Amino acid sequence: MSSYKVKETPGNTKWFTHDRFGMFIHFGLYSMPARGEWVMSRERIKIEDYKEKYFKHFNPDMFDAKKWAKSAKDAGMKYAVLTTKHHEGFCLFDSKYTDYKITNTPFGRDLVKEFVDAFRAEGLKIGFYYSLLDWENENFPIDINHPRQWYEDAKKLDEGRDMKKYVEYMKNQLTELMTNYGKIDILWADYSYSELPDWAEIRIKNNPWMQFGGLKGKDQWQSEELINHVRSMQPEIIINNRLEIEQDIVTPEQWQPTDWITDKETGEKVVWETCQTFSGSWGYHRDEHTWKSPKMLIDMLVNTVSCGGNLIMNVGPTSRGYFDKRAEDALKVYENWMKYNSRSIYGCTMAEPEFKAPRGTRLTQSDDGKRLYIHLIEYPYANLVVENLKNRIEYAQFLHDGSEVIYEGDTDLHTYLSVEMDGENSVKFKIPTYELDMIDPVIEVFLK
Ligand code: GLC
Image (cartoon, rainbow, N blue to C red; front, side):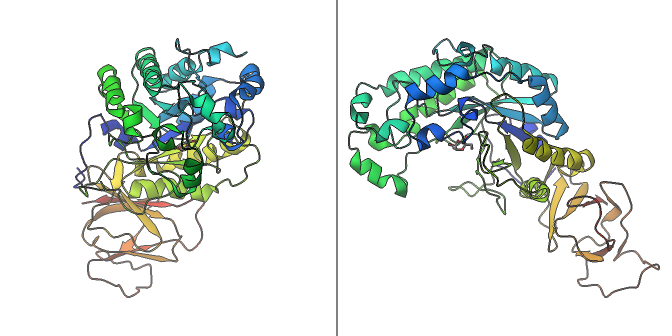
């Protein structure tokens, strides 16, 4: 067992910290404009116009849940989180509480159901993303993120909007999501904004009528009540921290931590998951070209686990329902790497503190402590010196092809010119002086 003590949480995170790698899926009407999932707010689109264009024409005719599930599985992902409803308010499931749902589009089917069945059949755990924001619901008070805040009639439109009724709506939908689809492993609620961001100051000043100062957080969402409600139906479920109450996972977004994330108050290590995109957008974005390189994709996964965390990588399917070539290629990168190297990811965590990562490397270690994985993020030249490994190695090999990696320190290498060793407890691995055909090759060390 790893010696790190991690803050206890109400849900079951045991499988989660073992599995390490998941797929996020952002899919909704916003896949049609193909300008990102915030398009309605950013472009200040009125709900009537949004419906007229997108709701009326939504038909992902090429959607095949089995294909999605297979790509996720092949990429080595062990769980998936789907946007059952994003900020636009449109529901991918057949809800009794709204007409603004997928079964009322030309597509006509409950996509959440098909997602659940297909992913579960592939052995993946099931997560539901649920947006707390809702730009369609007429009880959702207009605020600093709302598309209608910019219009002259915004104040009038806001009159009579009743947050209590909106919370009731969320509660009802969460009941549907938590009871109609079998066991749900993750609820990914999104998100709270109770603190005034700099950019919003002027908007709030100009719109003094906005309820709750234009902001929303745990008091407005009634987070405690929602959480208890969800747990009463799914006791083991993992809930993220975006209801503004710490639960099971902390969720750094679009950046890579360089150390284990800790609780702000107690300093304890926490369970965490970083969410990232292949390009700059969550929802399908045709003209977004900042796609990450294959090496960056692998680096991110390795770095995450070396800091004791999980990575959830996002796919934004096209509005016809398939993963476009760029997304497929990115998933292939993981597939090709995980096929050979997944042992350094699953069931692994930050290496014990006695092991220091040499320059240009990341370390992971199996939870039982028996194997240390040295990830060569910057390919070293000829030698790699690692401290505190002397007399600790039973055997060492490259993980991708199982070829022995020889070393000096407690062994004599008569085949190599001996180079002076730095550090008494160190060993020096002999690294081939040409680049191996593998991104971030991994040395697997069987520890004594
Ligand atoms: C942000 C965005 C949202 C995205 C989410 C994923 O909160 O509002 O569009 O779904 O991040 O983490």
